[in-house]
Amino acid sequence: MWLFWPAPAPGNFKQGCSYVLVPMLAGATSTLTPLQKSMVLHAVCRALPGLHAFTGCDSTSAFVGRGKKTGLALISAASGGAARQAMTQLGTSLKVSNDLLDMCEQFACKLYGSKTHTSINELRYEMFCSKASQSFQLPPTQDALHKHILRANYQTAVWIHALVAKPDLPGPDGHGWYVADGQLKVDWMDQQPAPSELLEFVSCGCQTGCTSARCSCLRASLPCTDACHCKNCENGRTLDGIELGETEEFYNYPYNSDATESDEDEATST
Image (tube, rainbow, N blue to C red):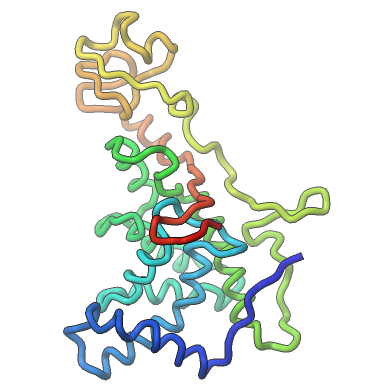
């Protein structure tokens, strides 16, 4: 049912990495000594299988607009030790630890250009409120991301064991996939993608308190949210913005943005 790329011999793998990465690392690690550059190169080579699975391959989905060039630049940077560690640990065990989930979540935040966020939910929330991105360009929520990490971890484990004659690996069921009617299917998420009022995708920009039929949210019998740009709102908002309880509700709803397309620097989508 599943076909996976076999892993090359270790010597050839390292040699191939050197041909590809040495020119790129020359700029990214220009402040390092030759020994330090060699150590970074070796660490990047070890992280490549996990990075390939995490950013999208034949059996795992990708992030819209965030492809392999972005990920490779992150793990190749002199300051990319945490990113390299996260991608290197993928596949080393079929049981994904909470520490690995946290490291991969922080790496996902960096894929979306954030240097400060460690929570993918908070980053998604801010991007949503800024209206700078369309819904399909938002990062996944934690629930959807964790399932993606399970799939990437399982795929990387298969690659790592590719040279083992009879690897003792379970099936993919329960590792981000599930079996239904005899077919293996992707387990995308456990919860709704967003609160119901956000799924309606109604917002307003009222200047007079959202108390009349001119308010699109009020006409739809929906409370205003942070997607709105209204002032002095009396329809579910306070003067300081959305109420805390509603904000926490947003954080608790994951959104699956595991996408079928990678960024513009990728020739194909997965």
